[in-house]
Image (cartoon, rainbow, N blue to C red; front, side, top):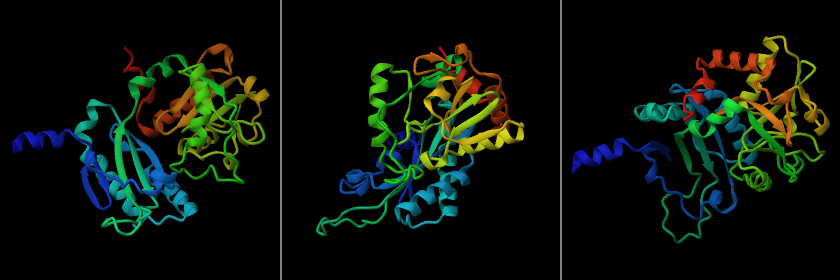
Length: 313
Protein backbone atom coordinates (compact mmCIF):
# COMPACT_ATOMS: atom_id res chain seq x y z
CA UNK A 1 0.00 0.00 0.00
CA UNK A 2 2.76 2.41 0.96
CA UNK A 3 4.75 1.57 -2.19
CA UNK A 4 1.64 2.05 -4.30
CA UNK A 5 0.93 5.44 -2.72
CA UNK A 6 4.57 6.51 -3.18
CA UNK A 7 4.42 5.50 -6.84
CA UNK A 8 1.17 7.42 -7.30
CA UNK A 9 2.64 10.56 -5.72
CA UNK A 10 5.85 10.24 -7.75
CA UNK A 11 3.75 10.44 -10.91
CA UNK A 12 2.01 13.65 -9.83
CA UNK A 13 3.41 17.04 -10.68
CA UNK A 14 4.68 18.97 -7.66
CA UNK A 15 3.70 22.60 -7.02
CA UNK A 16 4.70 25.18 -4.39
CA UNK A 17 1.74 26.61 -2.48
CA UNK A 18 2.02 29.18 0.30
CA UNK A 19 5.37 27.92 1.55
CA UNK A 20 5.06 24.19 0.93
CA UNK A 21 5.84 21.76 -1.88
CA UNK A 22 2.96 19.37 -2.55
CA UNK A 23 1.25 17.37 -5.32
CA UNK A 24 -0.60 19.92 -7.42
CA UNK A 25 -3.89 18.10 -6.83
CA UNK A 26 -3.65 19.13 -3.18
CA UNK A 27 -3.44 22.85 -3.94
CA UNK A 28 -6.77 24.29 -2.83
CA UNK A 29 -7.79 27.94 -3.28
CA UNK A 30 -10.74 29.15 -1.13
CA UNK A 31 -13.84 30.00 -3.13
CA UNK A 32 -13.86 33.48 -1.60
CA UNK A 33 -10.40 34.20 -2.97
CA UNK A 34 -10.50 37.53 -4.81
CA UNK A 35 -8.83 36.06 -7.86
CA UNK A 36 -11.70 33.57 -8.17
CA UNK A 37 -14.28 36.28 -7.48
CA UNK A 38 -12.84 39.16 -9.49
CA UNK A 39 -9.73 38.11 -11.35
CA UNK A 40 -7.83 40.09 -8.73
CA UNK A 41 -4.38 38.63 -9.09
CA UNK A 42 -1.33 38.42 -11.33
CA UNK A 43 0.73 35.69 -12.93
CA UNK A 44 3.66 35.09 -15.18
CA UNK A 45 4.91 32.14 -17.16
CA UNK A 46 8.09 31.02 -18.79
CA UNK A 47 9.03 27.70 -20.34
CA UNK A 48 11.87 25.24 -20.11
CA UNK A 49 14.21 24.26 -22.91
CA UNK A 50 15.24 20.67 -22.25
CA UNK A 51 14.44 21.23 -18.59
CA UNK A 52 16.18 24.59 -18.18
CA UNK A 53 13.93 27.60 -17.43
CA UNK A 54 14.07 30.36 -20.06
CA UNK A 55 15.11 33.77 -18.73
CA UNK A 56 13.46 33.09 -15.39
CA UNK A 57 14.79 36.25 -13.75
CA UNK A 58 13.37 38.45 -16.54
CA UNK A 59 9.96 36.80 -16.18
CA UNK A 60 9.99 37.15 -12.39
CA UNK A 61 11.05 40.80 -12.68
CA UNK A 62 8.09 41.39 -15.01
CA UNK A 63 5.86 39.51 -12.58
CA UNK A 64 6.81 41.84 -9.72
CA UNK A 65 6.14 44.88 -11.92
CA UNK A 66 2.59 43.55 -12.39
CA UNK A 67 2.26 42.97 -8.64
CA UNK A 68 3.45 46.49 -7.82
CA UNK A 69 0.95 47.92 -10.30
CA UNK A 70 -1.85 45.95 -8.58
CA UNK A 71 -0.44 46.77 -5.12
CA UNK A 72 -0.25 43.13 -4.08
CA UNK A 73 2.54 41.99 -1.77
CA UNK A 74 3.11 38.23 -2.23
CA UNK A 75 5.07 38.01 1.03
CA UNK A 76 8.26 36.77 -0.66
CA UNK A 77 10.80 38.61 -2.76
CA UNK A 78 11.90 38.02 -6.38
CA UNK A 79 14.99 36.00 -5.39
CA UNK A 80 12.86 33.61 -3.33
CA UNK A 81 10.34 33.33 -6.18
CA UNK A 82 13.16 32.42 -8.56
CA UNK A 83 14.61 29.87 -6.14
CA UNK A 84 11.25 28.20 -5.46
CA UNK A 85 10.50 28.12 -9.21
CA UNK A 86 13.82 26.41 -9.90
CA UNK A 87 13.07 23.90 -7.15
CA UNK A 88 9.63 23.12 -8.62
CA UNK A 89 11.25 22.49 -12.00
CA UNK A 90 13.86 20.22 -10.37
CA UNK A 91 11.26 18.23 -8.44
CA UNK A 92 9.34 17.53 -11.66
CA UNK A 93 12.33 16.73 -13.87
CA UNK A 94 11.67 12.97 -13.76
CA UNK A 95 8.29 13.61 -15.45
CA UNK A 96 9.53 16.04 -18.11
CA UNK A 97 11.07 13.67 -20.71
CA UNK A 98 7.67 12.10 -21.37
CA UNK A 99 6.12 15.48 -22.30
CA UNK A 100 9.10 17.36 -23.77
CA UNK A 101 9.20 20.60 -21.82
CA UNK A 102 7.23 22.63 -19.27
CA UNK A 103 5.44 25.86 -18.89
CA UNK A 104 6.58 27.25 -15.52
CA UNK A 105 4.05 29.57 -13.87
CA UNK A 106 3.87 31.82 -10.82
CA UNK A 107 0.47 33.03 -9.59
CA UNK A 108 -0.51 35.38 -6.79
CA UNK A 109 -4.00 36.40 -5.70
CA UNK A 110 -4.84 39.28 -3.39
CA UNK A 111 -6.32 36.75 -0.98
CA UNK A 112 -9.62 35.93 0.64
CA UNK A 113 -12.54 38.27 1.27
CA UNK A 114 -13.27 36.76 4.66
CA UNK A 115 -16.56 37.28 6.47
CA UNK A 116 -14.70 36.45 9.66
CA UNK A 117 -16.40 33.30 10.90
CA UNK A 118 -15.10 30.72 8.41
CA UNK A 119 -12.08 29.68 10.43
CA UNK A 120 -9.53 29.97 7.64
CA UNK A 121 -5.94 29.98 8.88
CA UNK A 122 -4.78 32.03 5.89
CA UNK A 123 -6.63 34.90 4.25
CA UNK A 124 -3.70 36.80 2.74
CA UNK A 125 -2.28 36.43 -0.76
CA UNK A 126 -2.30 32.91 -2.16
CA UNK A 127 0.93 32.06 -3.99
CA UNK A 128 1.28 29.13 -6.39
CA UNK A 129 4.25 28.00 -8.47
CA UNK A 130 3.46 25.28 -10.99
CA UNK A 131 4.59 23.42 -14.08
CA UNK A 132 2.44 21.96 -16.85
CA UNK A 133 3.27 20.36 -20.20
CA UNK A 134 3.73 22.58 -23.24
CA UNK A 135 1.19 21.81 -26.01
CA UNK A 136 3.92 20.63 -28.38
CA UNK A 137 1.80 18.06 -30.22
CA UNK A 138 -1.20 20.35 -30.64
CA UNK A 139 0.92 23.17 -32.04
CA UNK A 140 3.26 21.09 -34.20
CA UNK A 141 1.30 21.70 -37.47
CA UNK A 142 1.79 25.46 -37.02
CA UNK A 143 5.53 25.09 -37.52
CA UNK A 144 5.02 23.01 -40.64
CA UNK A 145 2.35 25.21 -42.25
CA UNK A 146 2.53 28.63 -40.57
CA UNK A 147 -0.18 30.32 -38.50
CA UNK A 148 -3.36 32.00 -39.67
CA UNK A 149 -3.99 35.37 -38.01
CA UNK A 150 -7.35 37.17 -37.88
CA UNK A 151 -7.98 40.52 -36.21
CA UNK A 152 -10.86 40.85 -33.78
CA UNK A 153 -13.72 43.36 -33.62
CA UNK A 154 -13.32 43.72 -29.84
CA UNK A 155 -10.55 46.22 -29.02
CA UNK A 156 -7.77 45.66 -26.49
CA UNK A 157 -8.37 47.39 -23.16
CA UNK A 158 -6.98 50.91 -23.45
CA UNK A 159 -4.06 51.86 -21.19
CA UNK A 160 -6.11 54.81 -19.91
CA UNK A 161 -8.48 52.23 -18.38
CA UNK A 162 -6.22 49.37 -17.28
CA UNK A 163 -2.62 48.93 -18.33
CA UNK A 164 -2.16 45.97 -20.70
CA UNK A 165 1.44 45.84 -19.48
CA UNK A 166 0.27 44.09 -16.30
CA UNK A 167 -0.20 40.33 -16.66
CA UNK A 168 -3.30 39.87 -14.53
CA UNK A 169 -5.66 36.96 -13.93
CA UNK A 170 -8.43 38.84 -15.72
CA UNK A 171 -8.12 37.81 -19.39
CA UNK A 172 -11.79 38.33 -20.28
CA UNK A 173 -11.04 41.15 -22.72
CA UNK A 174 -8.91 38.82 -24.84
CA UNK A 175 -11.04 35.72 -24.26
CA UNK A 176 -14.25 37.44 -25.39
CA UNK A 177 -12.42 39.00 -28.35
CA UNK A 178 -11.08 35.63 -29.46
CA UNK A 179 -14.42 33.77 -29.43
CA UNK A 180 -15.76 35.03 -32.82
CA UNK A 181 -12.39 34.37 -34.46
CA UNK A 182 -12.33 30.78 -33.19
CA UNK A 183 -15.94 30.32 -34.33
CA UNK A 184 -14.91 31.43 -37.82
CA UNK A 185 -11.68 29.43 -37.87
CA UNK A 186 -10.80 27.21 -34.89
CA UNK A 187 -7.16 27.12 -35.97
CA UNK A 188 -6.73 30.89 -36.30
CA UNK A 189 -4.78 33.09 -33.90
CA UNK A 190 -6.67 36.21 -32.85
CA UNK A 191 -4.95 39.60 -32.70
CA UNK A 192 -6.75 42.49 -31.02
CA UNK A 193 -6.50 46.06 -32.26
CA UNK A 194 -5.82 48.95 -29.92
CA UNK A 195 -8.22 51.83 -29.30
CA UNK A 196 -6.95 53.57 -32.46
CA UNK A 197 -7.36 50.57 -34.76
CA UNK A 198 -3.70 49.53 -34.86
CA UNK A 199 -2.38 46.06 -34.16
CA UNK A 200 -2.02 45.30 -30.45
CA UNK A 201 -1.57 41.69 -29.31
CA UNK A 202 -3.16 38.28 -28.98
CA UNK A 203 -3.97 36.12 -26.01
CA UNK A 204 -0.40 35.47 -24.88
CA UNK A 205 1.38 36.55 -28.06
CA UNK A 206 3.04 39.61 -29.58
CA UNK A 207 3.13 40.29 -33.31
CA UNK A 208 5.84 41.49 -35.71
CA UNK A 209 5.72 42.38 -39.39
CA UNK A 210 8.44 42.93 -42.00
CA UNK A 211 8.13 45.76 -44.51
CA UNK A 212 10.90 46.59 -47.00
CA UNK A 213 13.39 44.58 -45.00
CA UNK A 214 12.63 46.31 -41.69
CA UNK A 215 10.93 44.92 -38.61
CA UNK A 216 7.95 46.54 -36.89
CA UNK A 217 6.04 45.65 -33.71
CA UNK A 218 3.27 47.43 -31.74
CA UNK A 219 4.25 49.96 -29.10
CA UNK A 220 4.79 48.65 -25.57
CA UNK A 221 2.15 51.06 -24.29
CA UNK A 222 -0.61 48.92 -25.82
CA UNK A 223 0.68 45.39 -25.13
CA UNK A 224 2.15 43.11 -22.53
CA UNK A 225 5.86 43.46 -23.37
CA UNK A 226 6.84 39.84 -23.84
CA UNK A 227 10.27 38.60 -22.86
CA UNK A 228 10.53 36.90 -26.26
CA UNK A 229 9.39 40.14 -27.87
CA UNK A 230 12.31 41.98 -26.29
CA UNK A 231 14.66 39.15 -27.13
CA UNK A 232 13.57 39.39 -30.78
CA UNK A 233 14.16 43.15 -30.80
CA UNK A 234 17.64 42.61 -29.34
CA UNK A 235 18.46 39.83 -31.81
CA UNK A 236 17.34 41.99 -34.73
CA UNK A 237 19.73 44.73 -33.61
CA UNK A 238 22.54 42.20 -33.42
CA UNK A 239 21.76 41.00 -36.94
CA UNK A 240 21.70 44.54 -38.33
CA UNK A 241 17.92 44.48 -38.88
CA UNK A 242 16.20 47.75 -38.04
CA UNK A 243 13.27 47.28 -35.65
CA UNK A 244 10.69 49.96 -34.84
CA UNK A 245 8.07 49.79 -32.09
CA UNK A 246 5.05 51.91 -32.96
CA UNK A 247 1.68 51.99 -34.69
CA UNK A 248 0.96 49.30 -37.29
CA UNK A 249 -2.32 49.84 -39.11
CA UNK A 250 -4.27 47.27 -41.11
CA UNK A 251 -2.90 48.59 -44.42
CA UNK A 252 0.69 47.96 -43.36
CA UNK A 253 -0.22 44.57 -41.94
CA UNK A 254 -2.03 43.55 -45.14
CA UNK A 255 1.07 44.49 -47.13
CA UNK A 256 3.58 42.77 -44.86
CA UNK A 257 6.33 40.84 -46.59
CA UNK A 258 6.66 38.64 -43.52
CA UNK A 259 4.79 38.28 -40.26
CA UNK A 260 5.34 36.26 -37.12
CA UNK A 261 4.14 35.85 -33.55
CA UNK A 262 6.35 35.66 -30.48
CA UNK A 263 5.72 34.27 -27.02
CA UNK A 264 7.67 32.31 -24.47
CA UNK A 265 6.06 29.04 -25.52
CA UNK A 266 5.88 29.74 -29.27
CA UNK A 267 9.31 31.42 -29.39
CA UNK A 268 8.92 32.66 -32.99
CA UNK A 269 6.00 31.37 -35.06
CA UNK A 270 5.77 32.33 -38.77
CA UNK A 271 2.39 33.57 -40.04
CA UNK A 272 1.12 32.40 -43.43
CA UNK A 273 -2.08 34.44 -43.70
CA UNK A 274 -3.53 37.65 -42.30
CA UNK A 275 -7.31 38.23 -42.35
CA UNK A 276 -7.62 35.60 -45.07
CA UNK A 277 -4.95 37.00 -47.36
CA UNK A 278 -1.61 35.20 -47.80
CA UNK A 279 1.52 36.71 -46.29
CA UNK A 280 4.36 36.50 -48.85
CA UNK A 281 2.30 34.03 -50.92
CA UNK A 282 1.87 31.89 -47.81
CA UNK A 283 5.48 30.69 -47.87
CA UNK A 284 6.97 30.51 -44.39
CA UNK A 285 9.28 31.33 -42.85
CA UNK A 286 10.50 34.38 -44.75
CA UNK A 287 14.23 35.17 -44.84
CA UNK A 288 14.25 37.63 -41.92
CA UNK A 289 11.99 35.42 -39.83
CA UNK A 290 14.31 32.48 -40.54
CA UNK A 291 17.37 34.48 -39.43
CA UNK A 292 15.62 35.35 -36.17
CA UNK A 293 14.46 31.76 -35.61
CA UNK A 294 18.02 30.52 -36.07
CA UNK A 295 19.39 33.18 -33.71
CA UNK A 296 16.72 32.37 -31.11
CA UNK A 297 17.45 28.63 -31.28
CA UNK A 298 21.17 29.31 -30.89
CA UNK A 299 20.60 31.57 -27.87
CA UNK A 300 18.43 29.06 -25.99
CA UNK A 301 20.45 26.03 -27.09
CA UNK A 302 17.40 24.22 -28.44
CA UNK A 303 16.03 23.65 -31.95
CA UNK A 304 12.52 24.63 -30.85
CA UNK A 305 11.08 24.24 -34.36
CA UNK A 306 12.45 20.71 -34.52
CA UNK A 307 11.10 20.03 -31.04
CA UNK A 308 7.60 20.94 -32.20
CA UNK A 309 7.87 19.14 -35.55
CA UNK A 310 8.89 15.82 -34.02
CA UNK A 311 5.41 15.65 -32.47
CA UNK A 312 3.74 15.55 -35.90
CA UNK A 313 1.88 12.33 -36.60
